[in-house]
Image 1 (cartoon, one colour):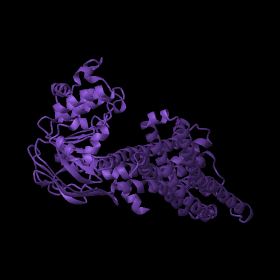
Image 2 (cartoon, rainbow, N blue to C red):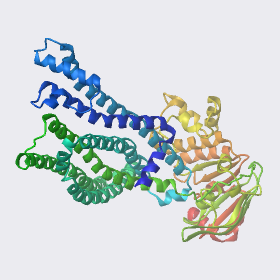
Image 3 (cartoon, helix red, strand yellow):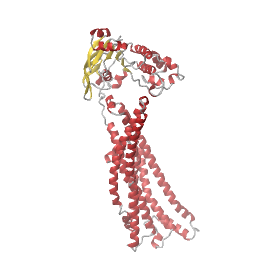
Length: 607
């Protein structure tokens, strides 16, 4: 647990000044408790004088001379009906709210500084984690659920915020309160016996605490899992709302959400019961200790303590038990945070399976040949590509065709270095992709996919993502080349129109033309088209195909197509079957050859 705390406090290193102020004010706030006890005892001794001559002279031993004079003046004022020294009595009574104000002020500053530090440190962690996840390979996202990743970034890091703010405050302030109050009680022989009697039941608190702490740890892990399941279910349901509605799955999805939510509630309440029951147990045992002390005074001793001593002990005991409750709950809070943070730090420790080179080699894609040099690739144990040997000359349009699962999209993903080959190499201009900086590689490749990815932003912003910082004139020119300008200017807001999540306010053809405009603006020498027209109707396909023809001009293009009509004019058609290249050539050659391509052609154009 100490290692865990050191790791969490390490997150606040950039804000160590505020963290130090939070710790300092926590210590001062803890020291205010014995000061408050001394003040109340002192004031009560003046207002309610005792018959004990020694105590009448001085309620507290070894008081400074100024306090002794103040005490005597206040006592004279009380004895003479406030005719003498009335201001002294008022100042004396004002000590109680003054000490409480100071205690509250330092308690407030303690919470403020620690919360200030915690929220910024956790935000830094979220940014670091989000950036780390974005830089992981595509394979990582195929193995991990998006809802669970979102839960780890948002929910799990929140537990660390509680450690940095609440737990740190308890760790600093409450032990100081306990030690200082206990030292005050044990300092005087008159209060030692009462103190020991009042705290004799303390060891019995440890047994239920250890039992319930274990239950809290178990339930906290389950709560994190159930919350991640809820997040995943919501993400899938909202993004796939059309399928949910089309198949009347609303009740099924709502029922699944209900079951998962109730499992989370059950685990959460289990943790609440285990966490909160320790408070009443400590309160009861504390009151039992005070009762035992009173019974001892009544039946077993003739030497009764002075009023000030008894008030001091009672106040001290009741001021000690709240910090003890906080410390008992602290372990539960740390156990919950540790269970959540294990998942966060596990993600941060995840290594990228597609690492950046230590010393990237410069390269230039324009006018360079692309060479797939005997490439093999597998998703885990499943082989996808086998011995792919392919050369794409500068400016060529190379089409990849084949049945579903033949490896066409995987080949394009390898070119973008979403994955690395398990064997062989991919070179551009003779330079292995693994020797290039990924940002340099991808800056020289433009991509248009079947599933158009647009963001809930303006048309201008969605096009500008192709080359951030492009001028308005360049964005307009890109839209013209993509045959998108006409439908854009017809909208009331024009280029400033917000298109909704995933471009829901646009038709399929319009979304695809915006994606093409983004690729045009990128002006990259290599173009990857992944079934860019397969999901469009005939009219939209014509408009999009015209835009694609404009985009492909003068670029090396790798085109994945199911509709063979879009690739008749390709410089080379590569036919894939079960991860192998089985045929290459132009359309006319492959049709005459009577192989796999000819069968695919007949299936589409037999009528």
